[in-house]
Length: 287
Image 1 (tube, rainbow, N blue to C red):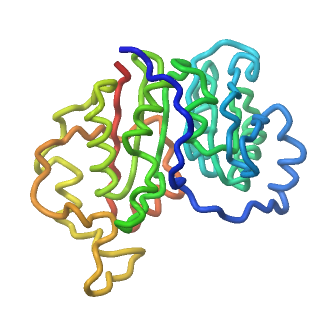
Image 2: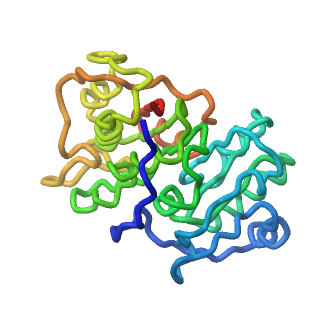
């Protein structure tokens, strides 16, 4: 199937909230000493430090100094997953997209500690980067692990994984490339599965698997764990976080992937396990 054309960046709510970007201590030093050559100098379209000039194109060959398969992680956080994977796969190049400068500075520290040469980072809004900055059909794998779930119904329009994101993912992935998603909230997992499975540009690598009692969705509904938010009982009259639309019965659709063994167990995921929440993995192939 043909790759969707580049479209102008839509005027829509971003999927993140601005937080402090001040660097201190080791992170400040890491940015000063390591940014050159590792941080992509992205031209901006606005005053926002996460914007992307729509005419800018990332040249992976020039940045890495070689031609190699490219993996892009959206929302790389503190860089735990991307640097771990890069260490195990030296013949693959990795691009980490993140909006928070302190997280990118921490990733630089990890790159330096592991003496990695196959990781680059960019402070960008992923929706803009996937729409124009990254060349069509240039990415072998696209990862999005534990994005902000935006629990409240009125905020769900801010979720990153929706129909437009799936089109952007299809644009940058090579034919046969992989889209990997993970979340620890059932309602967002259902949304991810719905929009990705509805696209003719993707095939679920585990379609029909893990249904009924074997489904993590069935299990989380039965456990009632999502009645708890941050370990505290939900206040009477409020919706369950992440499960306002679906909350009982058995999951007849399935399609959940086994845990992606290329994803290191991060501190964030450990917290989800400690809270008793289920992890939902999805894996799709670009047709």
